[in-house]
Length: 324
Ligand SMILES: [Zn+2]
Image 1 (tube, protein in one colour):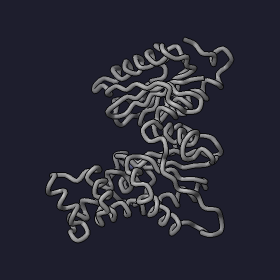
Image 2 (cartoon, protein in one colour):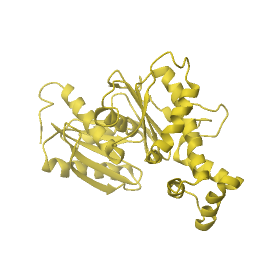
Image 3 (cartoon, protein in one colour):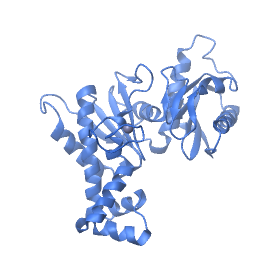
């Protein structure tokens, strides 16, 4: 019961054959073609053809950033690709003789952590992926939460600050504007401007002409007070948001993923602290665990493949048998 997972990212398309335990059997990657969406479709078909030629597979799951409908079929909107109401599943089905599902990339990553990673022992979890933006995934009662139209669990667009910073989604004050990798850069630049504990941030910015995520990560690794302060401010915002999510969803675990999560406990400690400070009725109910994601770069392909395998196993008999 192997399945193929494909993860269409902004810069690369990753594809892999995944076994039922979530292990990668074979993987491929190719740069994401710029320009017409047709080129991305072609690249996905080529990758599936190559992978399914070598292994018996039962289904294909494709993860991409964007709003995907509840039927895991149509991409309403993708921020990185020129897709608007793209019937991507139907297009792939016309060219690939396997059951196919399309899934939001954050949902796929969250599902992978729930099935095989940090949250494999719980039934209810919330995952936040702290990358360029903030991705979200919810598993409630062992089920991936998609919402009625498929566009649920967009946790990065929780309104945190009424009338706050303009978000790429068109609203103001979204969590993403205060808790993403980009937000960390903004906080670090503000500290650099202010001097004092930000003096090393300012020095690196002057030397390199920039202060990006890798520069900040380097200073965090050096134990620089300014960089650590920026990370703590970011963690505080994330922890405050988790308290809000906790009040609604009561998960046993929050999983924090994405590039910024490589900071480990340096990020988790302020998240936990802010969560406790902002928890309603603290001390009167069990509190969740906070953990760093385990699958890191592979979560998208692993989760997409596993969701596709589940989808295929629910099809009427005759559709779930390996076809090649
Ligand atoms: Zn937003």
